[in-house]
Image (cartoon, rainbow, N blue to C red; front, side, top):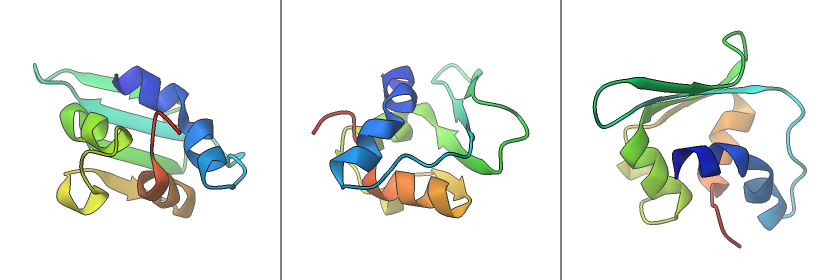
Length: 88
């Protein structure tokens, strides 16, 4: 599910009528077993970090961002967590 959320970032923005940001994103999530799952370039200024379970709850709109351990660095990353979804 986490991969689907990362790959579906454009859908999150499109669903609220916003263009997908052009800048690259880095997503680093801590898997249930403690491993780190990462997507995007390490040098990306737009970053989302936190637990994979909270990320999945956020992108399925089952938990507000404020009730997760997710952090966002950069204006576009913050906006993404506000509008995140994997369905319309």
